[in-house]
Amino acid sequence: MFQSSTRDIPATCSIPKHVAIIMDGNGRWAQKRHLPRLTGHLKGVDAVRSCVRSCVERGIEYLTLFAFSSENWRRPKEEVSYLMRLFNLALEREVARMQENNIRLRVVGDLSAFDEVLQQKIIKAQKFTELNTALTLTVAANYGGRWDILQAVRKIIVEHPAIHPQELTEQLLTSYMVMANYPEPDLFIRTGGEQRISNFLLWQLAYTELYFTDTPWPDFGPRQLDEAIKSYQQRERRFGRTSAQLAPESATGELP
Ligand code: IPE
Ligand code: IPE
Ligand code: MG
Image 1 (tube, rainbow, N blue to C red):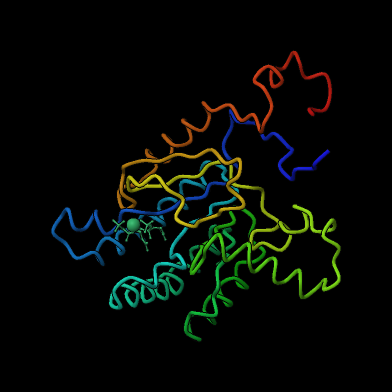
Image 2 (cartoon, helix red, strand yellow):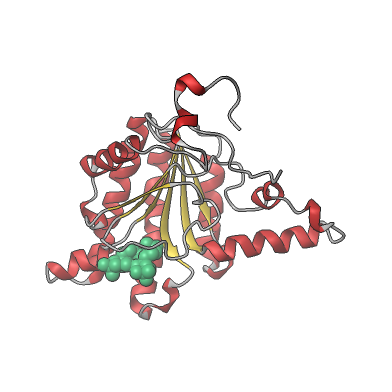
């Protein structure tokens, strides 16, 4: 039988272990207030800080935030350079706070596109916080789901040039993706009203519960996070099985 890598059934009526968020709607939040789009991004950083705190308080172990997609380079030059400046500043200012709060920071994506100073700051911040255990905060920057799959395949070809097609399994491919050792996201949230994935975690979202809200990212606070978690807790995660198979009385052993 085909062995799917998605076999375990995590408990649903609990706090999600891994939450992945597309933080969207900064620009429209600002424009609605007749402010420059950049102000929306600045407010977005405050929302990140609040969201990280809320996740720690709720016992969420992994928070993955989409900060800059591989397609966002298409934006006006000034907006891209402002976002890079904000990223630089946030790294400088927030790392000490992360350390205090036992938060491990990881940045995933094609980091080679960033300037040398930013790359060094990322490496330093990751190293500084690598032993922390309360929350793994992963920032996806110059990330694309297609890029992630492709970089994994390329690495496999380099490291196993003579691999037999049957040896290329879901497990092997997963182990080369940038979030190899994480549990797959339980809950995906997209703020800002759009209902699409925009090349975020294409491989990892296969069985994630999806939640879309019109709230723009700068307005996304603890109350909105709790609403998303509540919606998640009402879902039945079947992973291909029937509802009856999940009922406790039918659980006579390991699930198929
Ligand atoms: C998300 O907000 C932030 C980034 C993509 C960096 P947007 O800037 O996409 O905001 P909208 O969608 O234009 O409102
Ligand atoms: C997705 O938002 C990327 C991030 C939030 C970083 P976009 O605003 O770039 O997505 P599209 O263009 O509306 O699909
Ligand atoms: Mg957007």
